[in-house]
Amino acid sequence: MRKLLTSLLVLALTGGVAVADTYIGLFADGQASHCYAPTAAYTTTRVHVIAWLDASWVGQISACEFYVENYPLDGPGGIVTPVWSTPLVIGYVNYGIALAFPNPLNGPLAYLGRMDFYCIDPAWLGDNYALAVRPSRQSDTLALVNTLGETIPVAGGQFTFNCTNPSACDCLESVATADMSISNVKALY
Image 1 (tube, rainbow, N blue to C red):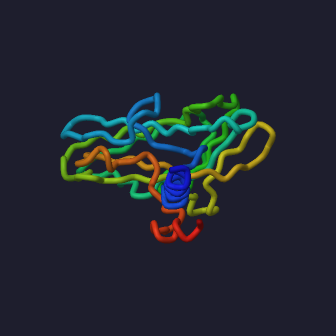
Image 2 (spheres, helix red, strand yellow):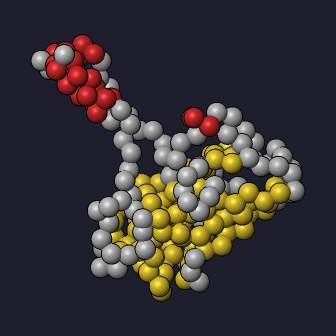
């Protein structure tokens, strides 16, 4: 029985999903509990940009850099209005943006800002329309800077508009860490 439990534990750890402890995420609420929301004509859907800090984070956040992949352009279908928690903003969210915070931000949930998506045409952001936080196209950097001046690379979260299956609309993309069958686990013993 002990070998079976150990084997299952090894399989779960090696064949599971890698989840970042510290990341810049996109959320439907300021408490970072949901990563998806519906849209409707002539309504605004707010997406909060929050740095999720794990227990090993040292200091406060003084800056960050990232970009949002699949960021929709303003047009007849809708309008996006970003509002950041600082006036010190360089760049564009759809290419590469750097934010500096004169008053450093505390964790574990550090509020970086928000993006308001005003939908005019329901087809503008269709079913399962996903945004993802990625390294800046300008500098290839996805990082937070702490008050000690250390630049710490982090992971990026994702957000889904009009999610048709909420159990599949995760806050972080799934990244397989290994491909291992039961026979591979048995071979370890």
